[in-house]
Amino acid sequence: MKAAFHTGKKEISIREIDMPEPGENEYLVKIKSCAICGSDIWWPNDAVSNEPVHGHESAGEIVKCGKNAKKFKSGDKVVCYAILGCGKCVHCAKGMLTYCKAKKFVEGGFQEYAAFNESLLFPCPENTDWVTASLLSDAIGVPLRGLRRLPVNENDTVSVWGLGPLGLLQIMFLKANGVKKIIGIDTVNERLESARKLGASDTINPKEKDTVAGLMGLTNSLGTDKAYVYIRHPKVTEDVFKSTRDGASICTFTGLDGKYELQEWYERTLVWSFYFMSSEYEENLKFIKEKNIELKSVVSHVYPLEKINEAFKKRFEEQDKSLKIVINMN
Image (cartoon, rainbow, N blue to C red; front, side, top):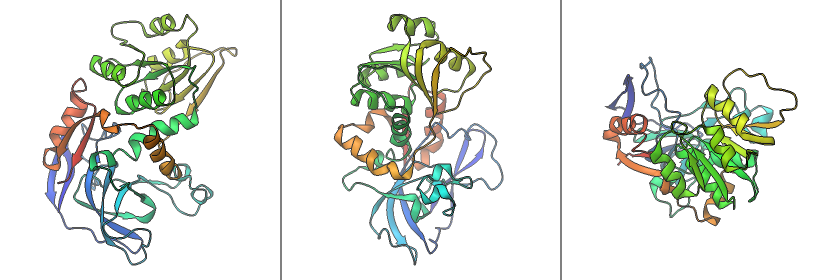
Protein backbone atom coordinates (compact mmCIF):
# COMPACT_ATOMS: atom_id res chain seq x y z
CA MET A 1 0.00 0.00 0.00
CA LYS A 2 1.01 3.64 -0.46
CA ALA A 3 1.87 5.87 2.50
CA ALA A 4 3.14 9.46 2.76
CA PHE A 5 6.23 10.03 4.93
CA HIS A 6 7.77 13.32 6.03
CA THR A 7 11.35 12.97 4.76
CA GLY A 8 12.77 16.49 5.00
CA LYS A 9 12.00 20.20 5.12
CA LYS A 10 8.88 20.75 3.01
CA GLU A 11 9.30 17.25 1.65
CA ILE A 12 6.86 14.34 1.76
CA SER A 13 7.67 11.08 -0.02
CA ILE A 14 5.24 8.36 -1.10
CA ARG A 15 6.46 4.87 -0.22
CA GLU A 16 5.15 1.35 -0.62
CA ILE A 17 4.81 -0.36 2.77
CA ASP A 18 3.12 -3.49 4.10
CA MET A 19 -0.54 -3.27 4.98
CA PRO A 20 -1.06 -3.31 8.78
CA GLU A 21 -2.87 -6.14 10.52
CA PRO A 22 -5.55 -5.06 13.05
CA GLY A 23 -5.08 -6.11 16.67
CA GLU A 24 -7.75 -7.82 18.75
CA ASN A 25 -9.62 -4.56 19.49
CA GLU A 26 -8.79 -2.82 16.24
CA TYR A 27 -10.21 -2.34 12.78
CA LEU A 28 -8.37 -2.06 9.48
CA VAL A 29 -9.70 1.05 7.76
CA LYS A 30 -9.31 1.80 4.06
CA ILE A 31 -8.68 5.54 4.28
CA LYS A 32 -10.72 7.46 1.73
CA SER A 33 -9.89 11.04 2.69
CA CYS A 34 -7.80 13.00 5.17
CA ALA A 35 -7.85 16.78 5.55
CA ILE A 36 -4.75 18.87 6.18
CA CYS A 37 -4.92 20.58 9.58
CA GLY A 38 -3.45 23.95 10.49
CA SER A 39 -1.59 22.09 13.26
CA ASP A 40 0.35 20.03 10.69
CA ILE A 41 3.32 22.31 11.29
CA TRP A 42 5.82 19.45 11.00
CA TRP A 43 5.94 19.96 7.21
CA PRO A 44 8.51 22.83 7.05
CA ASN A 45 10.79 21.20 9.65
CA ASP A 46 13.52 18.60 9.41
CA ALA A 47 12.29 15.02 9.50
CA VAL A 48 13.06 13.01 12.63
CA SER A 49 13.82 9.31 13.01
CA ASN A 50 10.84 6.99 13.37
CA GLU A 51 8.44 9.73 12.34
CA PRO A 52 4.95 8.25 11.87
CA VAL A 53 2.64 8.69 8.92
CA HIS A 54 0.87 11.95 9.68
CA GLY A 55 -2.72 13.01 9.11
CA HIS A 56 -5.40 13.03 11.80
CA GLU A 57 -8.60 14.24 10.09
CA SER A 58 -9.45 11.05 8.26
CA ALA A 59 -12.45 8.99 7.24
CA GLY A 60 -12.77 5.65 5.53
CA GLU A 61 -14.33 2.23 5.26
CA ILE A 62 -13.72 -0.76 7.51
CA VAL A 63 -12.29 -3.72 5.59
CA LYS A 64 -11.24 -6.04 8.43
CA CYS A 65 -12.19 -6.51 12.07
CA GLY A 66 -10.01 -7.65 14.96
CA LYS A 67 -11.09 -10.73 16.92
CA ASN A 68 -12.67 -8.76 19.78
CA ALA A 69 -13.79 -5.71 17.79
CA LYS A 70 -17.59 -5.82 17.80
CA LYS A 71 -18.73 -2.20 17.42
CA PHE A 72 -18.47 -2.08 13.61
CA LYS A 73 -18.49 -4.52 10.70
CA SER A 74 -16.71 -4.68 7.35
CA GLY A 75 -18.16 -2.13 4.95
CA ASP A 76 -19.10 0.41 7.62
CA LYS A 77 -18.14 4.02 6.95
CA VAL A 78 -16.26 5.63 9.83
CA VAL A 79 -14.75 8.94 10.92
CA CYS A 80 -11.50 8.81 12.88
CA TYR A 81 -10.77 10.49 16.22
CA ALA A 82 -7.26 11.58 17.18
CA ILE A 83 -7.11 11.18 20.98
CA LEU A 84 -6.51 7.78 22.58
CA GLY A 85 -6.93 7.77 26.36
CA CYS A 86 -5.42 5.32 28.83
CA GLY A 87 -8.86 3.82 29.47
CA LYS A 88 -8.24 3.57 33.22
CA CYS A 89 -8.29 7.06 34.71
CA VAL A 90 -11.27 9.02 36.04
CA HIS A 91 -11.34 11.19 32.93
CA CYS A 92 -11.48 8.22 30.54
CA ALA A 93 -14.27 6.71 32.65
CA LYS A 94 -16.30 9.87 32.00
CA GLY A 95 -15.45 9.93 28.28
CA MET A 96 -13.26 13.00 28.71
CA LEU A 97 -10.27 11.64 26.82
CA THR A 98 -8.73 15.05 26.16
CA TYR A 99 -8.23 15.43 29.93
CA CYS A 100 -6.40 12.10 30.27
CA LYS A 101 -2.85 12.73 31.50
CA ALA A 102 -1.57 9.71 29.55
CA LYS A 103 -3.45 10.46 26.31
CA LYS A 104 -1.81 9.75 22.97
CA PHE A 105 -2.24 11.67 19.74
CA VAL A 106 -3.09 9.25 16.93
CA GLU A 107 -2.28 9.97 13.28
CA GLY A 108 -1.92 7.77 10.20
CA GLY A 109 -4.40 9.38 7.82
CA PHE A 110 -2.09 10.04 4.88
CA GLN A 111 -1.95 6.43 3.72
CA GLU A 112 -4.23 3.95 2.02
CA TYR A 113 -4.91 1.73 5.05
CA ALA A 114 -4.55 2.19 8.83
CA ALA A 115 -5.43 0.17 11.93
CA PHE A 116 -7.50 2.00 14.56
CA ASN A 117 -8.57 1.10 18.08
CA GLU A 118 -12.33 0.73 18.44
CA SER A 119 -12.54 3.84 20.66
CA LEU A 120 -11.08 5.99 17.86
CA LEU A 121 -13.88 5.42 15.36
CA PHE A 122 -17.24 7.11 14.94
CA PRO A 123 -20.03 5.99 12.58
CA CYS A 124 -20.15 8.16 9.47
CA PRO A 125 -23.60 9.14 8.13
CA GLU A 126 -24.32 6.90 5.15
CA ASN A 127 -24.97 9.53 2.49
CA THR A 128 -21.93 11.65 3.36
CA ASP A 129 -19.32 12.15 0.65
CA TRP A 130 -15.72 11.46 1.65
CA VAL A 131 -14.52 15.06 1.51
CA THR A 132 -17.26 16.11 3.92
CA ALA A 133 -16.60 13.03 6.07
CA SER A 134 -13.01 14.19 6.69
CA LEU A 135 -14.44 17.39 8.22
CA LEU A 136 -16.67 15.65 10.76
CA SER A 137 -13.99 15.28 13.44
CA ASP A 138 -11.65 18.23 14.11
CA ALA A 139 -13.04 20.72 11.61
CA ILE A 140 -16.47 20.88 13.21
CA GLY A 141 -15.52 19.54 16.63
CA VAL A 142 -13.09 22.33 17.54
CA PRO A 143 -15.31 25.38 16.83
CA LEU A 144 -18.43 23.68 18.19
CA ARG A 145 -16.63 22.86 21.43
CA GLY A 146 -15.68 26.53 21.56
CA LEU A 147 -19.38 27.41 21.39
CA ARG A 148 -20.07 25.00 24.26
CA ARG A 149 -17.25 26.45 26.32
CA LEU A 150 -18.36 30.01 25.52
CA PRO A 151 -22.05 30.16 24.49
CA VAL A 152 -23.45 33.14 22.63
CA ASN A 153 -26.82 34.80 22.18
CA GLU A 154 -28.10 36.53 19.08
CA ASN A 155 -27.58 40.02 20.51
CA ASP A 156 -23.87 39.51 21.20
CA THR A 157 -21.24 41.33 19.19
CA VAL A 158 -18.54 38.74 18.50
CA SER A 159 -15.01 38.94 17.10
CA VAL A 160 -13.24 35.98 15.49
CA TRP A 161 -9.45 36.26 15.31
CA GLY A 162 -7.80 34.21 12.56
CA LEU A 163 -9.84 33.19 9.51
CA GLY A 164 -8.30 29.91 8.51
CA PRO A 165 -10.78 27.05 7.99
CA LEU A 166 -11.58 26.77 11.72
CA GLY A 167 -12.13 30.51 12.11
CA LEU A 168 -14.39 30.52 9.06
CA LEU A 169 -16.36 27.58 10.43
CA GLN A 170 -16.64 29.44 13.74
CA ILE A 171 -18.24 32.33 11.84
CA MET A 172 -20.63 29.94 10.07
CA PHE A 173 -21.66 28.36 13.37
CA LEU A 174 -22.12 31.75 15.07
CA LYS A 175 -24.29 32.84 12.16
CA ALA A 176 -26.28 29.60 12.39
CA ASN A 177 -26.92 30.38 16.07
CA GLY A 178 -28.48 33.70 15.14
CA VAL A 179 -25.61 36.07 15.94
CA LYS A 180 -25.95 39.14 13.74
CA LYS A 181 -22.82 41.15 14.54
CA ILE A 182 -19.77 39.00 13.73
CA ILE A 183 -16.44 40.68 13.05
CA GLY A 184 -13.67 38.65 11.39
CA ILE A 185 -10.00 39.60 11.72
CA ASP A 186 -7.19 38.37 9.47
CA THR A 187 -4.28 39.72 7.43
CA VAL A 188 -5.27 37.87 4.23
CA ASN A 189 -7.85 39.82 2.23
CA GLU A 190 -9.08 36.72 0.40
CA ARG A 191 -9.95 35.12 3.73
CA LEU A 192 -11.73 38.28 4.84
CA GLU A 193 -13.80 38.05 1.67
CA SER A 194 -14.64 34.42 2.46
CA ALA A 195 -15.65 35.43 5.98
CA ARG A 196 -18.11 38.00 4.64
CA LYS A 197 -19.62 35.43 2.28
CA LEU A 198 -20.00 32.92 5.12
CA GLY A 199 -21.64 35.22 7.64
CA ALA A 200 -19.34 37.94 8.97
CA SER A 201 -21.06 41.33 9.14
CA ASP A 202 -17.70 43.16 9.16
CA THR A 203 -14.01 42.38 8.70
CA ILE A 204 -10.72 44.03 9.62
CA ASN A 205 -7.26 43.58 8.15
CA PRO A 206 -4.67 44.54 10.83
CA LYS A 207 -2.17 45.35 8.07
CA GLU A 208 -4.48 48.05 6.77
CA LYS A 209 -6.16 49.36 9.91
CA ASP A 210 -5.52 49.43 13.65
CA THR A 211 -7.54 46.47 14.91
CA VAL A 212 -8.54 47.92 18.28
CA ALA A 213 -9.61 51.21 16.73
CA GLY A 214 -11.54 49.31 14.07
CA LEU A 215 -13.39 47.17 16.59
CA MET A 216 -14.17 50.13 18.81
CA GLY A 217 -15.52 51.97 15.80
CA LEU A 218 -17.84 49.07 15.05
CA THR A 219 -19.10 48.77 18.64
CA ASN A 220 -19.79 52.39 19.65
CA SER A 221 -16.50 52.37 21.60
CA LEU A 222 -17.76 49.60 23.88
CA GLY A 223 -15.79 46.63 22.53
CA THR A 224 -17.09 43.18 21.65
CA ASP A 225 -19.06 40.95 24.03
CA LYS A 226 -17.28 37.75 23.02
CA ALA A 227 -14.04 36.88 21.22
CA TYR A 228 -12.90 33.56 19.71
CA VAL A 229 -9.16 33.48 19.16
CA TYR A 230 -7.33 31.17 16.72
CA ILE A 231 -4.00 33.05 16.74
CA ARG A 232 -1.22 32.87 19.31
CA HIS A 233 0.76 36.10 19.25
CA PRO A 234 1.59 38.73 21.93
CA LYS A 235 0.11 41.59 19.89
CA VAL A 236 -3.09 39.65 19.23
CA THR A 237 -3.53 38.83 22.92
CA GLU A 238 -3.05 42.47 23.85
CA ASP A 239 -5.49 43.64 21.19
CA VAL A 240 -8.12 41.07 22.21
CA PHE A 241 -8.08 42.41 25.77
CA LYS A 242 -8.21 46.02 24.61
CA SER A 243 -11.03 45.47 22.11
CA THR A 244 -13.44 43.56 24.35
CA ARG A 245 -15.84 45.36 26.67
CA ASP A 246 -15.66 45.28 30.45
CA GLY A 247 -17.09 41.96 31.59
CA ALA A 248 -16.52 40.32 28.19
CA SER A 249 -15.58 36.68 27.60
CA ILE A 250 -12.68 35.38 25.52
CA CYS A 251 -12.26 31.82 24.21
CA THR A 252 -8.79 30.83 23.03
CA PHE A 253 -8.02 27.70 21.03
CA THR A 254 -4.26 28.32 20.96
CA GLY A 255 -3.42 29.65 24.43
CA LEU A 256 -2.22 33.18 25.14
CA ASP A 257 1.20 34.70 24.55
CA GLY A 258 2.90 37.78 25.98
CA LYS A 259 3.42 39.52 29.35
CA TYR A 260 0.90 42.07 30.52
CA GLU A 261 0.14 44.23 33.54
CA LEU A 262 -3.62 44.11 33.88
CA GLN A 263 -5.44 46.02 36.58
CA GLU A 264 -7.80 44.29 39.01
CA TRP A 265 -10.77 46.19 37.58
CA TYR A 266 -10.01 44.92 34.10
CA GLU A 267 -12.62 42.16 34.24
CA ARG A 268 -12.61 39.47 31.56
CA THR A 269 -13.63 35.80 31.59
CA LEU A 270 -11.03 33.61 29.90
CA VAL A 271 -11.90 30.20 28.52
CA TRP A 272 -9.50 27.67 27.03
CA SER A 273 -10.90 25.18 24.52
CA PHE A 274 -8.91 22.15 23.33
CA TYR A 275 -9.97 19.76 20.54
CA PHE A 276 -13.36 18.13 21.32
CA MET A 277 -14.78 15.32 23.41
CA SER A 278 -15.69 12.08 21.67
CA SER A 279 -19.05 12.23 23.47
CA GLU A 280 -19.86 15.41 21.49
CA TYR A 281 -19.66 13.77 18.06
CA GLU A 282 -23.34 12.87 17.62
CA GLU A 283 -24.45 16.28 18.88
CA ASN A 284 -22.06 17.90 16.39
CA LEU A 285 -23.62 15.93 13.52
CA LYS A 286 -27.07 16.95 14.70
CA PHE A 287 -26.06 20.63 14.70
CA ILE A 288 -24.70 20.46 11.15
CA LYS A 289 -27.82 18.68 9.89
CA GLU A 290 -30.38 20.86 11.68
CA LYS A 291 -28.65 24.10 10.69
CA ASN A 292 -28.23 22.85 7.10
CA ILE A 293 -24.56 23.83 7.03
CA GLU A 294 -22.56 23.12 3.87
CA LEU A 295 -19.15 22.19 5.25
CA LYS A 296 -17.50 22.09 1.84
CA SER A 297 -17.88 25.88 1.75
CA VAL A 298 -14.47 26.02 3.44
CA VAL A 299 -12.81 23.45 1.15
CA SER A 300 -10.77 25.10 -1.58
CA HIS A 301 -8.84 22.11 -2.99
CA VAL A 302 -8.88 18.32 -3.12
CA TYR A 303 -5.64 16.54 -4.08
CA PRO A 304 -4.76 12.88 -4.67
CA LEU A 305 -2.20 11.32 -2.32
CA GLU A 306 0.46 11.45 -5.04
CA LYS A 307 0.29 15.27 -4.98
CA ILE A 308 0.43 15.70 -1.21
CA ASN A 309 3.57 17.88 -1.43
CA GLU A 310 1.76 20.27 -3.76
CA ALA A 311 -1.20 20.27 -1.40
CA PHE A 312 0.90 21.21 1.63
CA LYS A 313 2.64 23.98 -0.28
CA LYS A 314 -0.72 25.38 -1.33
CA ARG A 315 -2.06 25.22 2.24
CA PHE A 316 0.87 26.80 4.06
CA GLU A 317 2.62 28.97 1.47
CA GLU A 318 -0.35 30.26 -0.53
CA GLN A 319 -2.86 31.24 2.12
CA ASP A 320 -4.37 33.82 -0.19
CA LYS A 321 -5.30 30.98 -2.56
CA SER A 322 -6.33 28.21 -0.19
CA LEU A 323 -8.62 27.28 2.67
CA LYS A 324 -9.28 23.72 3.80
CA ILE A 325 -7.45 21.16 1.68
CA VAL A 326 -8.36 17.48 1.61
CA ILE A 327 -6.26 14.55 0.42
CA ASN A 328 -8.12 11.73 -1.29
CA MET A 329 -6.39 8.36 -1.20
CA ASN A 330 -7.95 7.07 -4.43
